[in-house]
Image 1 (spheres, rainbow, N blue to C red):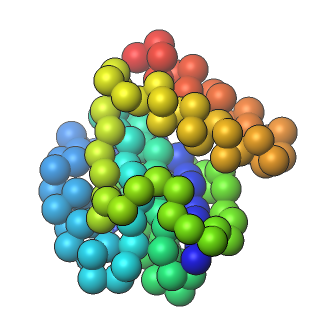
Image 2 (cartoon, helix red, strand yellow):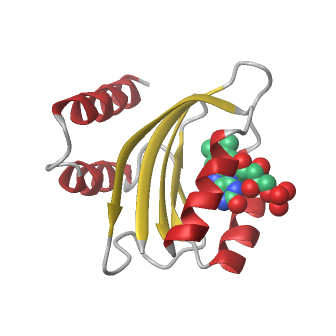
Length: 131
Ligand SMILES: Cc1cc2nc3c(=O)[nH]c(=O)nc-3n(C[C@H](O)[C@H](O)[C@H](O)COP(=O)(O)O)c2cc1C
């Protein structure tokens, strides 16, 4: 299985309807065996996709060309033996609540990542805290 984590910024064009993104994502992901998590604070996204490699690659190409967000930066792309972020067709997190635990879980996964990637993620986490 393949796991991809990325961050991106919401486009400025119009307010983003996260509920609509989630509805479509859950339908497609359930069909394709993809699970994961979408963190959205209205300005930025952080998503984890897990599942069969080909399906995850295909979804990521689709997501990457979606004009509702830009500046998509891949934090991590790795082969996994088992799903690490649960069985949700696409869990949703917003700032507050358990999002600190999520950021920690992601930071742990990035321990082996390059300094560049770690800095990108830390920048994201900092902006999130200031929000
Ligand atoms: C931040 C973000 C996350 C998304 N996550 C997913 C996802 O996990 N799965 C998915 O199928 N589409 C996701 N989408 C939507 C895709 O970009 C695309 O609109 C959708 O897959 C098209 O589905 P359709 O061909 O069934 O209409 C996401 C879009 C955005 C902006």
